[in-house]
Length: 210
Ligand code: AP5
Image 1 (cartoon, rainbow, N blue to C red):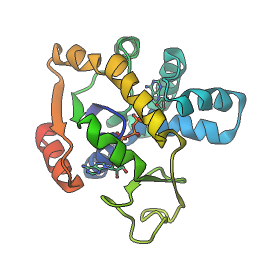
Image 2 (tube, protein in one colour; image 1 turned 60 degrees about the horizontal axis):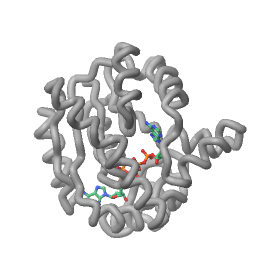
Image 3 (tube, protein in one colour; image 1 turned 90 degrees about the vertical axis):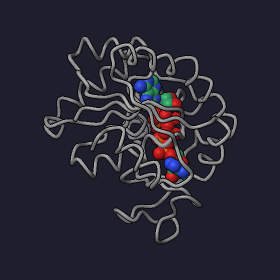
Image 4 (tube, rainbow, N blue to C red; image 1 turned 120 degrees about the vertical axis):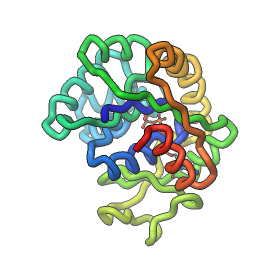
C-alpha cells in the first residue's frame, strides 16, 4: 500500500498514520517530523526551517521535494509507505508524479475547524519517536512519558492559538485544492474525525479496505 494522507493541522493525520503503519507494517513518513528533526540539529538549514514552521507557513516546495526523494530511497519504503503531510501544494503533487510516486489511495481526514484548536492545544508529542498524544483524548499511561519508547512528551511551538489559525488558513488555500486534484484521478477517499480515536480508525480502515 502506498498512501497519501491529506488533512488540516490537527485532523489526526499523524495519529491515523501510526495506526495504519502498525496494521500494514509499512513506514509512516511525516514531513513535519523530518523538518522538526532538522530544526533540532541546529544547522543553518534547520534554523531556516524553524522560521517557516513556527510561523505556520509552508517550507519552499523544492526543499520538501528533495527531502521526500531522499526518504523514499531508503530500503524500508520498498514495500509501501504512508505519506503524512506530503504533498501539500499543487506543485508538490505534480513533482510527486514526476518522481514516479504512484499511490493506491489518497485519504482525506475531515474535521471541522472548530474542533482543531481543542485538539492541538491538548496535544503532546514524544520528543524521541514523535508519537502524538492528547492530554484528554489519548493520554499516555504515565504522565508526560511516551508509552512506546519512554521518551519525554513535549508541546509543539506551532500549537499556539495564533499559529494554529495561520496553519488552518494555509491548509484551506494551498492544500485543500489537492482533494479535487486526486478526486479527478479516482484516488480520493474520506474519513471523518470522530470524537473517539478508535472510531476514526475503524472508519479509516474501512474506507481503505484494510
Ligand atoms: P505537520 O507536522 O505535518 O503538521 P500539520 O499538518 O499541521 O498536522 P499536525 O501534525 O499538527 O496534526 P495531525 O493532522 O498529524 O494530527 P495529530 O494526529 O497529531 O507540519 C508542521 C509544519 O511543517 C507545517 O506547518 C509546515 O510549516 C511544515 N511542512 C510539513 N510538511 C510540509 C510540506 N509538504 N510542504 C511545506 N511545508 C511542510 O492529532 C492532533 C491531536 O488531536 C493529537 O493530540 C491527537 O491525540 C488528537 N486526536 C487525533 N485524532 C483524534 C480524534 N479522533 N479525537 C480526538 N482527538 C484526536
